[in-house]
Length: 307
Ligand code: COA
Image (cartoon, rainbow, N blue to C red):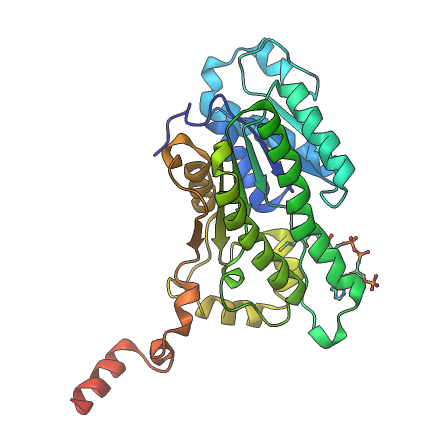
C-alpha cells in the first residue's frame, strides 16, 4: 500500500515507543523511510526497541544499505551528514514538562528537525472507582492527559517558532468519544480529554499548518495492556464475543492507519478521530445482541415464524 519513501524527510517522535503499539508504529514508520525517535522511562527497554526498529528498517531496505552504514546506525551516536534514516531513544517521563522540552530540543538537535509526534504513552489499570485513590487517578491522568499536553506543547512551540508545518497523532480509545467506561475511570477521563485536545488544537493550530488527528483503537493485544486489563482466559473469551469480527486487531493494521494519517496523503485531514475496532463500538445497536442468543439458522427460522 505504501512506498518505501512514504515517510522519508520525516522525523517522528513516538512516546511510549519502547513496546506495544508504540513500537509497532515505530517499526512501520522506520520501514517507510522515517527517522524515528522513541521515548520512555526504562533505558534497557528503549535500547532493545531501537535495535528492533533498525532491524525493521533494514529488512525492508536491506540490500541498499551497506555494512558500514549498518554499523553506523548500531548505537545511539549522532549520525550527521548521513542520508540513511536514523533511530534514537530518549529516556524521558512524559509527565515531566521540563524534561519533555529538553527532549524535543535534543531530538531537533540530533536529527536536524522534527516533523511528527505520536502521543502514545499511556497508563491504565482495572479498579472499582469507589476504591480509587487520588494518587491512582492522578498517575493515569498525568501520563495520558498531562503527558500529551506536555509533548504537544513542546512540539507545537518548536514548529511555531521555526515556522514549520507538522503532524500530531494522538492514540485514544473507543470509549473516549461517547460512552466512557466502567472500571477504567482515570483512563476514560484522560482519553476523552486527549480527544478534545485533538479537536481544539486542530482548529487553533491549523493556521500554523499543524495537523492533529487521533486513532481510537479497540482491543489490540499488547503485553502491557493485557497484563493489566485482561484478568483471565474466561474474561478474554467474553471480550472477544463483543467484537463483531470475532478477532482482535493486528498491530500492522493500526500501524498502517497511523502511517496514512502521518503522511502527505492525509494533508487535508485534521481534527479527525478514526476508530479501528472490528466494529466493537457498534455493540450498542438496539437489536445487535440477538445474534449472541442463537445460531444464524435458528434466528432465520424464528424470523420466518414471526413474519
Ligand atoms: N489499582 C488501583 N490503584 C493503583 C493500581 C491498581 N492496579 N496501580 C497503581 N495504583 C495507584 C497506586 O496505589 C498509587 O496510588 P497512591 O499514591 O494513592 O498509593 C498510584 O496509582 C501510583 O502508583 P505508582 O505505582 O507509584 O505509579 P507509577 O507512576 O509508577 O505508574 C501506573 C503508573 C499506575 C499507570 C502504572 O500502571 C504504569 O506505569 N503504567 C504504564 C504502562 C501501562 O499502563 N500500560 C498499559 C496501557 S493500556
